[in-house]
Length: 382
Image (cartoon, rainbow, N blue to C red; front, side):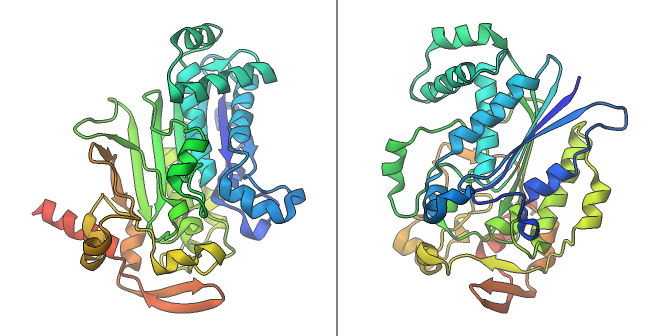
């Protein structure tokens, strides 16, 4: 038995920018080649999309559209095909669109298993079936694939920071893009034992809308499956990493690494992470809404609702716009096991640094969404 750990980095993120590495790279470097008992731990890393130098001026466009997502998912799948043997444990980790890729790979493995060959043709066949399944399942084709694959394959853990879907292009309507690009299954499969999700409270950009794990109302995850979705102060990269000042993202890094170590057999060098990080709940929060096309989000920010509390949106805005540009779910869905990290409460109500563009200010941290969630929690407790 061995452990296979696949890491997917975020859009525009790469490991050679040492002062701007993400939590994906930091965690990857903390996974030893073997645990204390000698169990091997094989690591595979997929670089973020839109990171090739030759893209030049197209870098932003390629990243915004999400080109290359399927290629990375297939890269992770190919690694599993090459390395997997019966009884191996699988761990999938990602940030941003890399989180989307990790969750999609989990869906792909749950659907068709792991092919016993790693040839381009075998991988392409499974990928094509996975894509087709979103439009309508082909039972005969799927049965044939499963018959020549390792199936079913349990997945020990999917651990992600701030999942962003492949869709959501800033300049084009989301409904139009949904007609152009295939969707992937990003709900947590029953074959996944542990799901860990760190989420950013303060991300205001619509194209970065969060994708939480949900269930149909009135239902629950399968017995024995553990899901934790935890909110942290900050915007997208304040949770997943990638800024030079990593005080906030280090909090989410340590939470996820510690929970993986506590809930799964994966060996993680927590001492190394604690030595090399500087978590601080009063660290610098970076607001990206001054940048180019995202300026509209400064005027009308996308609101990430905590525990689906509508009062996270002001009464005036609700009266005029309803719940437009919020993360309100369809009426038949509900999120799974959301909570607020203690570091948020340590920051709440205090003055802390906020950077917009080149301007650094100290502002009191009192997000309406947090206040609404805390009030609702207090009411439930009586």
